Image 1 (tube, rainbow, N blue to C red):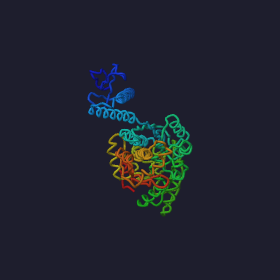
Image 2 (cartoon, rainbow, N blue to C red; image 1 turned 90 degrees about the vertical axis):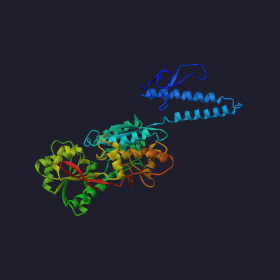
Image 3 (cartoon, rainbow, N blue to C red; image 1 turned 120 degrees about the vertical axis):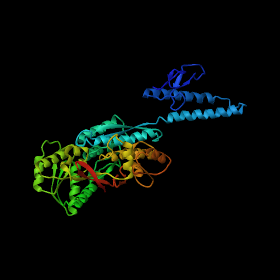
Length: 473
């Protein structure tokens, strides 16, 4: 609670006396922020009590002043009373207006499962954007945004679907940042989002199949399709002088889609894929899979898997047997866990994940500081997913997903003033004033086609046991 006001006997308030009839009654202390003697409400209960008292007081003032004899010969008093009446009415309206609505947005990511080392930073990125908007008070006349987390598991479609249904029916969410992995994202989209008219913006689901999924205009993603990643992988390996590779992929929509996209691009560029074989996650021993890969041969092993699951298992088995010494890692394999698991044993290995060197990256890193890893894969994209959703709500003048879905592409692309991390308050005000915005964000957002990122990538190499940036593509 705030400091106590000796006159009122209440926590740091402005004392108000009397009732509507002018009789004395118990004092009410209004903890008005920024006024002399004013404190700040410290709990939700404090705020509710204060708001009720404030509203009653202001409405009482409106009632009393409305009874003034407008025929008064004292023109100065008359004009003063008119001014007070107008001021009281304005304050009463402002007090009610500022409360706004609470908008809940689901954050559905794999907090357990094969990418659990990536999702804490992803969630923190999305929630940072929501906090920024709530603190601005500029969304839909003072709305606040509350994140509600749920676990997609990354790989269990039934669990992910149930989690999404719970957030819609029990929490009343107005949109979903997520999901993360492609299979569970597709399941939530088909089984829950479309049926309930809920917008989804995924920061990391990259399967090419999602580009053509039936979505009623409700699905978007700030990460590029793996159709683009397959081309980037090819370019990197060819520039490295690698023309023959073996491929292992996790046996799901993400792994299969990426492996197929890469093989088509690599072979079109003149390369050879000696084998493309699936692996299952959750196994204790991958020696059989590695044996088949080694028999087929290749200058490098492409591991289209998950760093917290079978992908790392395959790499460990390959190192243990000497089957391969260097690897190429797509996005699902790149995180701090890769460094922790293998260190300099995989020096010389290469890879890529969505990323950019745009000004937004630097601004985002400055905002985050040491709170979490702003450079972790899909973390900038998570901030951007949440930001786009809220800017679209403002453009639509509504938090109804079936209304604001039609404005996401508008705020994501030119024309308009470019908007970067930390500038969401200004963007909301511009939109409210009828101005166009072009959200660039932390990941250089540019949505194309069915509402997915055009695609920028960070090329990496493992050097001294650390993930090191080579360039951006």
